[in-house]
Image (cartoon, rainbow, N blue to C red; front, side, top):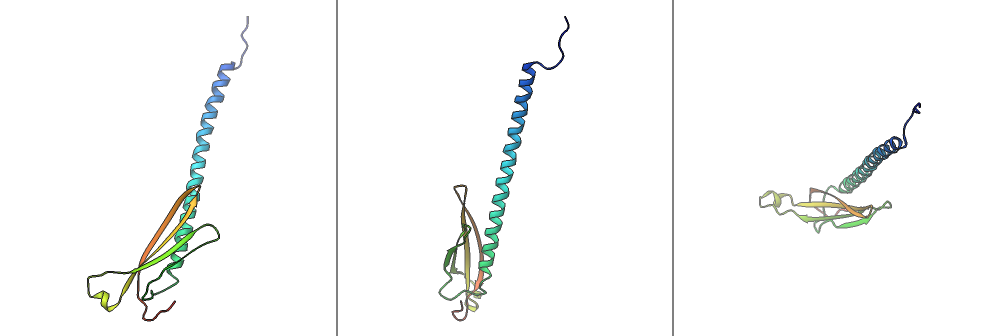
Length: 128
């Protein structure tokens, strides 16, 4: 008798199983890359928002700078300042304040946060 040429059912099932595993791995890596790209975009937007908030003033009022708010796309921000405690004599010549901006948002049920800080001089008068 002559044997029929082609693949047996077992060979076809093994080939499909290997292909399904490979596609599953590719899907997972693609989804992970997409999640990382979304998080990088959100972090970049938070950094730009924080920087623009810091650039709103060149100096801090004597009583400090404390504000908060939120954006339409789900970012919440908070600005806080405190006098910089510097033991040197520079602090008496030009009072300085440490200003921190904290931006937080929710990404897939997880709270994310970005913080940026700088030092600004104290304003001579209460300019806002």
